[in-house]
Structures are given as structure tokens and as C-alpha cells.
Length: 334
Image 1 (cartoon, rainbow, N blue to C red):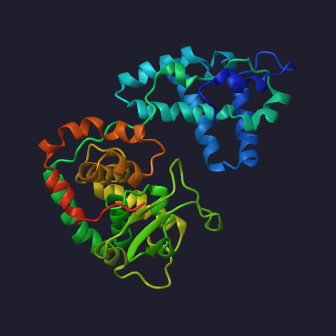
Image 2 (image 1 turned 180 degrees about the horizontal axis):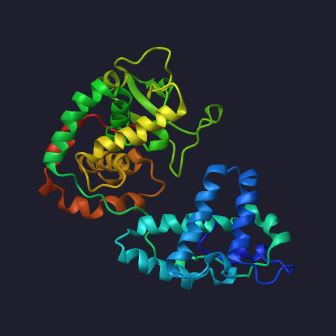
């Protein structure tokens, strides 16, 4: 992905052969060649479509594919941001859209574009000039009644009817795991050191698992939580999300779990992600912001602060005791 210094990295994409290349030329070339080049078959159409949608949002009533590529610039992006904000989209969502669109100009594709297109020296969206937030929005505490109802339903109907989604609920709300970690976690990731059971999170090349934008670390797991995670789990299953296929694990951790969460937190767009932030908020309340950074494995405490700074100033008015009670004294171990 490009750094904020867009001009430095886009310079190699210029070519003398074809004047006035269009957005259509760029999209056709990208969708044809990018999947095989950088292994993003599923994401190629999504990224190309996102760039097209951005242009169509700003240039309504025109043929977006005929737009000259030099018109894909900061001014176009600013217009898109203004329109998206009028639609009440968050900066996080807008940034995600722009990052997907910018991926069409990754340096990995330089040699493909060089021979086919004429691209200007400055092309794309410079994030540093767009003033978008660099992290997700602050954590907003869950209503106490919603927490009680969600917890009761999780340990009751969800546990009985959807045990794999229940385990995903525990991994997210108790251990703060990301979705990609939930669907990948296996029994042997839990190790015992000095009498303490730890979930060890690190890159595991042999299992085709790589941490996404986070540090490696280890999280303490109580005997009670381990018993809940392994209840009814057959020995033949190494994955804690005990579905027979990757698609099944995905459905349990994403679709089924999110449907469940939205029954109690209907205003949260990413339910499982909100549970992870909820877990971090409890660690921050009990042990401080640096413990929360380690627990969530953020690369910088500034990222953690962006979630919880305002929240921690007001936590005593939001029943901290009720929030922390579900942890029963389990501390993070790094």
C-alpha cells in the first residue's frame, strides 16, 4: 500500500506510449492482470468497483469510465468525502473506501502499467492531505441492560444452538481477538507457562496464518474460560471454531455472531469488532491504557488512546464494576 507521500511512489507509473489514458483503460487492465500478479482474485473486482463508485458519486450523470486518469486526484477525493459525510458515513468507512481505490496504484503493479498506460506523475489520493482519521472511532460503552441481555442469551440459547458462534463470542469478548484470529485459532495455540494457561498469538507460517497489523503476544486464559471454550469440542477438531470447512468457520464468526450481537446492539455496524473493543475497555478500566495496548496488541499506545481516552474520563459514570465483573479477576499476561 502507498505511503502518504503519494508523489514519491507513483512516479514510476508514468509512461510515454499512450496519451490520455482513461479510467476504463485502467480498470480493464487492473481487473485482467492484477489477480494473477499479486494474488488478490477476490479483492480485485471490489477494489476496482470502489474506485469506480467514488468517481460516479462525484461525477454524477457522466460516463465515469471515460474520465482521464489525471482527474483522479485529491480534489475528487475531497468532493467524495464531503458527499459521504452528508450521508452520515464515518471517517473510518470513508478511509476504507479510499484505501481500496488507492490499491489500484500499488507499486507492485508498476511494471504492468508501464507498458500499457500513460499515467501522470501525481495520481490518486494523498491521505495526509485529506485529514481522515487514522484509526477507528472511539469506543462507546454498551448500555448496561443490553450487556445483561446479551450475556444471558450468549450463555443460554447461543451456547446451546450455535456452539461455534458461542466460542467466537468468548474469543472476541473475553480475549479481544480479531475476526481473522478467531477463525484461525487452534488448540495448540494455548500453552501453559509457569502454571498459567496462555493464548499465544504470533505469525504461524506453517499454518498460513499471519497477524494483521498487530504485535505478537500472549493473553491469560482462566480455567473457567478454557472450560467454556472446549465444552463439547470433539478431539478431532483442532480449530476452536469447530466447523468442518473454512466457509463454516467464517459463517460462525462473522455472520452468525454478528446477527446475534445486533439483536442487542442494533446501532453497531461491526458487532464482533465492537466486542473486541469492549474487552479492551475492561482491561483499560481495570489495569490502565498500557495494559489495554498489550492486551489488544496495538503497535502504539496512541492507537489504544484513540479508542479509550474520552471513555476513561467518564467510565465511573457507566458502571465499571458491572463491565469488569465478567472477567472474574483474569489478568492479561504478556
